[in-house]
Amino acid sequence: MRHLKFKEIDSTNTYLKREYQNFDNLTFVSTSFQTNGHGRFSREWFAKEDESLLLSYLIKDRSLIDNFSYISMFTAALIVKYLEDKGIKNVAIKWPNDIYVDGSKICGILLEGEIPHYLVVGIGLNLNQSNFNNFNLRHPATSLKMLSNGKNYSQEDETKSLINVINSFWDNFSNDWHVFDNFIKNHNYLKNMRVKVTNQAIKIEGIVEDIDSECNLLINNGKEIV
Ligand code: BT5
Image 1 (cartoon, protein in one colour):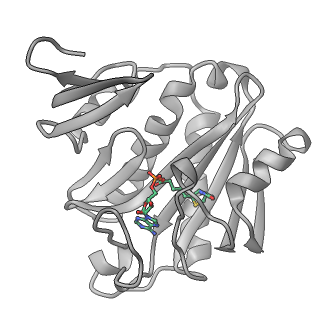
Image 2 (cartoon, rainbow, N blue to C red; image 1 turned 30 degrees about the vertical axis):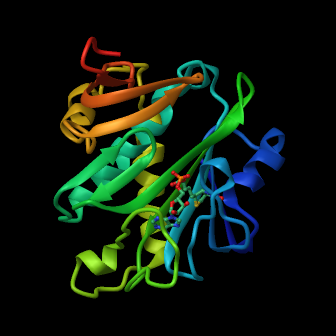
């Protein structure tokens, strides 16, 4: 395992996408500040200096890349465990890539890469924000500080601890792709909610029933489960 730390960088994801040929499986990159942090569809990821945990890790192991559909959900499950170990309650995974606490987003995960060559998993986890009033967010947001009576968190320490959790999981992973089945089902934020999802140009609307053991969202559209 290798950990590269930056004070400022465009984006930890973009860095690993540029440099993936020079690094091994499970290389971690973190930074205090990103000038071009992003989510899906080039949406902006907001994080002032030292306020967030900004981390990406590289996957080059072929057996993991071949099962890419599990990677962001497994990362989410590890982050949920990490937050629960800190005593945070009501943590849930909003399929496919967000973590919510009590209805507010605390973490976003971004999977990028080129299959079968490499994957980059990016994590933005809110640590020390006191509010999100100045950002034009699509959904309510929260931070560890807001959930723990104003306590401040060290970006460096939290990054190190989360890296340990993720690294030791993948280091010991024995290709059991069902290891989180129940955990993910029990932390499904969208369960029983009405959603609209576009899957390969097909629009599906209905009530979320479950997440299956291949990490697909199961939606009841009134006629069938899709
Ligand atoms: C995500 O995208 O939630 C994935 C975000 C991944 C960010 C990490 S940071 C380290 C690495 N380097 C990067 O450049 N990216 C990764 P998405 O589901 O598309 O959500 C983006 C939306 O979340 C935005 O349009 C905002 O509405 C909202 N948002 C932005 N910043 C936020 C924050 N700090 N907390 C909560 N919501 C935020």
